[in-house]
Image (tube, rainbow over all chains, first blue to last red; front, side, top):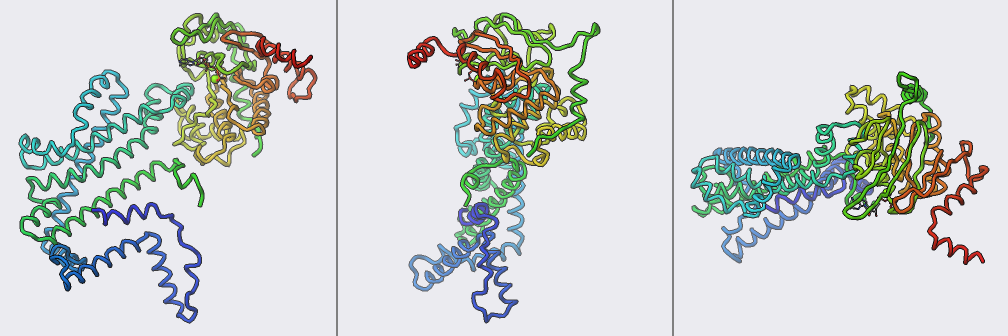
Length: 303
Length: 279
Ligand SMILES: Nc1ncnc2c1ncn2[C@@H]1O[C@H](COP(=O)(O)OP(=O)(O)OP(=O)(O)O)[C@@H](O)[C@H]1O
Ligand SMILES: [Mg+2]
């Protein structure tokens, strides 16, 4: 999962205008001009998305796998080369298995994640608006919150069978707890002067909630969503490994049963890619919603 | 960044502040009547009596911890007095209201709104259509000379600019009384000086009723029609400042007023010390 996650993380950290002007200087003046421009474009592309480390990673992997195939440091089937994986992925895709699995997993995580977030925000709002709700809810949350959600899966399967429902429930539950904790914390830490200002400007209690409490809790909510995204992906994969007949997690157990290590690698890489896509989408939302926010290390010291 | 003139606003305010009741008596009089406040078993305010007339600029001056903010927060309606009553035109203050605008030391701008939308917040929660609210906000932004920052977010502004926005935001909902709790306390000396001058200009145009908390004697004497000196939760002295506006520190009577206030403000122990050093 990690190797596929790297590019987006790096990409976010890379300054958008990292392109140094001297990159475009001709290295060799005798080179023909069009070639030069193409090369400049390429290096700019690589730099913009900081792809070089990832490329290098796969190249070394490829070389190592091939080397291993000839000198047999260990069983070459344990670590297939990326080129073999691409061929295998293509074969799987042609048979339709891959697309079907990706679709199944995506639908599960989307539905589960959205349900979890909506429920968490809803209950968070109730908890911060009504003391009674908080009084009754927080002890129970403190009781069941710390239980790793994955421990609940066998129970869910016994209760609800092996259909879609227990899987989505598990994902929603893993999303729910962190999002709720962060959102409630966000509501609690709204600066009192902001609320006082709004009241003195004539805002009603409802308006204070809609226009002050909610927007100032959004950053916290987004942090909660990001934290829970990783957890809900684990929940997705584990629930697909236990009692499922589709999805990326299913490919992995299936591959283990038939010792198809290449399939396993394909599924693992796809999971990583899908997680990265989701994390990236979430970050885009964050960047849009929090355009007003300045700060962080990059603003603290100009480089 | 220059201080702008906004004739429309001045006209609006003239109409607003000259509201009178049926018998022709000017509305808006703030009465603080025998007000006391405790936190736990600690008495923060003993017994405060104060009355503020319409258009009056009153400065509350005192050492840190003497209860200035507590008093102001009670006038705003954020805190309730334990004893006594605060009334505006005979109406008991029961909670915050748009009739009493507040400017905080930490400016308390909404960080997720642009400068323009921050100022438009008041008009828009008071059911003005969005476009109208923005129009009003733009005029107040001009009043404080920041129209070019309309689309910026608070995080992009300097401390002095933020505080101008805070003042514009409070004025935009046309409060009967403007409450300011050390609004320039977090600014550097030079910015403080210019802000003081600009606030004075705005006040001379709009003639709002202001209750202004400060640590600085010179700021109080520069701005106030009346300086209320507080000590240990009590009013220790009230000074009418009869110097013609605009004042400078060289205005006749300015220094004398400052030293008179300083005498009241200083503790007996400090006075003794000064006397000893003097001899
Ligand atoms: N919510 C509170 N609970 C308990 N004590 C408080 C509370 N608010 C203020 N106090 C106490 O009341 C006293 C007066 O506080 P206040 O904030 O009114 O002082 P101040 O004159 O505004 O001081 P400063 O100039 O430093 O702002 C202080 O000693 C403070 O410790
Ligand atoms: Mg104070």
